[in-house]
Image 1 (spheres, one colour):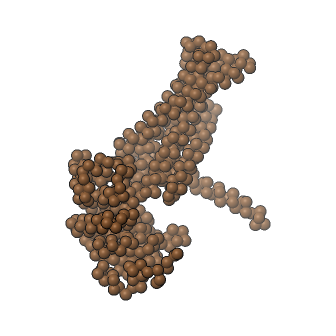
Image 2 (cartoon, one colour):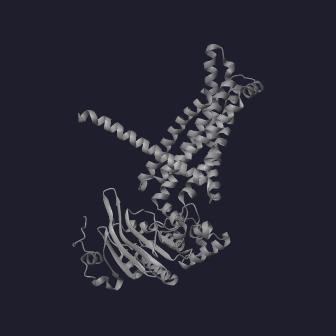
Image 3 (cartoon, one colour):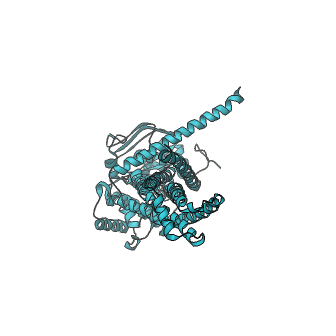
Length: 248
Length: 261
């Protein structure tokens, strides 16, 4: 279980997180929604330690993430980055098997390649993609490779940062379905940040709305449409008028 | 009164900013060195860095050295002729190339070619979240990206300087024997007899320091890069400026230490 309690983070005078409280139960899929620039990525990166929060506590299974052994802690995570964040200089299979080629999870090269090809197949890519460079792939294929890399070491927890940004609606649907299937199949805990409502409905068990540096509403995805919260209502209906100021 | 204090305030802020920057770079360099000597070691990345910094820099180093050596021979011959000292061409070319021009020009070429490339590559990785991805994959960016490049530069730039020295001396030899009428055997004999072992060792030591500066500044500016294409551009430009200035300053200090004290 991941618990965030009164987490605050500022960049100079920009107070991005102003006291976030959130609980993500083991084996569930939490999707955090909110407008651009509301601090969703900062929140996600704070859990991983990529951004150091100013105050408050973040715990994983009761242990403070800032005090955990970094390697052991990170070995439990997989992450799909918004732009894929694939390593340009490495072929696709070495990207996917990156964690399996070095560090505590190191395996023989042939075995790591086999795992990589199996994971590529799992996300709908053929084995001939394995030896290509990331720059030779389309945006959708890069997302799939990123997803394969995120699941390669069978992590307990997977983070998805804007998984459908930049994809056409059909490819977005494919990626959303893949994420849901994989999370269910692995029994993993998932945390996704997005402002794509089709992703929310496809991926989420629970939803949290981040606005003004705090969680405005959280609940089951089925309750989202009648949450009674004006922020959630405005966001999911995509209205310009409401409590969320729309900058024109 | 405030009009008088404003320039002082500006001077103070700039001085503090400069000192803070020096502190940050020094800490970064010390961290890089500490990661070089602590496992894990990434041999593939080290091998790639050796190729990029060493082997692929050979053409530009060779061309720079040969033209500089040739030009030096022409200048010394023309200058020496003013007081009937044309015969010193082999000795002055040798000492000029080995003690000064070889290490400095190779250092500057490495700053132009390697520092810029390292800064642009790491900055792009930062902008595209590849550095964050490394961290989430339990890989320390200092260990994976910085340590192999700095170590490779520390080892291979002295070699490049040595090769540059030889090619530079050869450039002087080719011009002197080809167009200035020097005897080939006498030219080589004069060069070899005049150079001391310490001249060569000081040249290689300078190469080691300049290599360290070039790689460290590339990595530092890359890791500190701002967002977007502009951030990458600034990081690349800043890294080359800083590396070039630091190489020239370090050369002055090292020359003082080696030959004046």
